[in-house]
Image 1 (cartoon, rainbow, N blue to C red):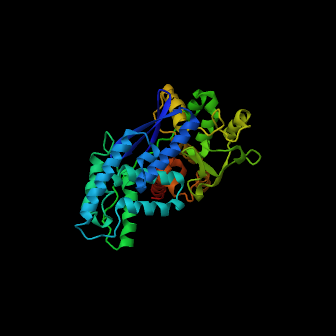
Image 2: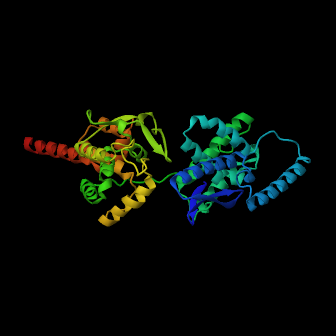
Image 3: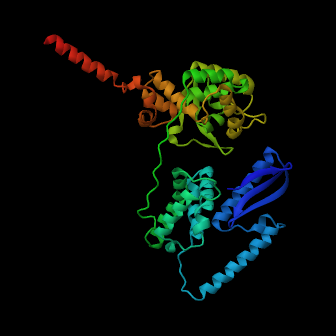
Length: 400
């Protein structure tokens, strides 16, 4: 995907086009506003590349690469016309052509962030390999070989892709081919092609002692932020995008109504994520203190410009350095959500209540993911059964 970087204080776009890495420099100073502006340009470029409508010169008229790509396109078009004179015309579109149709139809269903992610995934993997091939010419064998190549020697990677990443790269390709097969009356080559099995990973929540240590030593201006994270189970985007209008001190509730994704406020992950979280005393006190600092701003936790925190910066500058300083195991900040769940369970709170606090529609995930950390809650440590049989054996012995 296109990225915005800086060199000598000026911003430039870094993206790939027709298998080539392109860097186009601007005269824009490295500021937050200029970065956002250039990110929007990069998003448009990515979309046009995947849709096959990108014209290099339209964006970079003075670039030498514009001449190179135009010459390449002319050669490709000449070869296409020559080939078209020898072969019968086939109305089935290429993958790149149909991707344009499919994406335009799907865009209304998706969030902007998801749309950008799908465009980026197609551009990075399927389009470079199959973009110019007609849909009905793509075979199952080619897809299996493509998947194997991703797993062994992935594009622009120094190590093999994980199974989950390979599945993510294949998923939009699969959706396009299945939809095209139905529209153009051919058998989808994905028939019988299963997703790779993903190895289960364990969560790594903090103990209450570790939470206490972290909150004691973390930078003072982030103490309230991490108190809320550890004791509410809010997702990163939910807490970073939290507005004061959703804080109800009288009812001691946090109303989760929005989330910030890629610096843009949007709807929560799903309908079930719309919820009211009870403020425990530490959370209530932390938000009262935070209100003294940012109460005049729109967002509860914000930067000096009043905008939501950029979680990558917070993770790099605050989270990981604090863990290193305390000698705690390195883990992603999302583990604060898992920590809240395990602490609630360990305290004996009702699973149904916990599920509502977490934004889950059922308690299934609680018992599937978290129960092993709190054996005494559900008596799944075998102690209840042991007491039963020992009592029974003892009574039997006395009666005999």
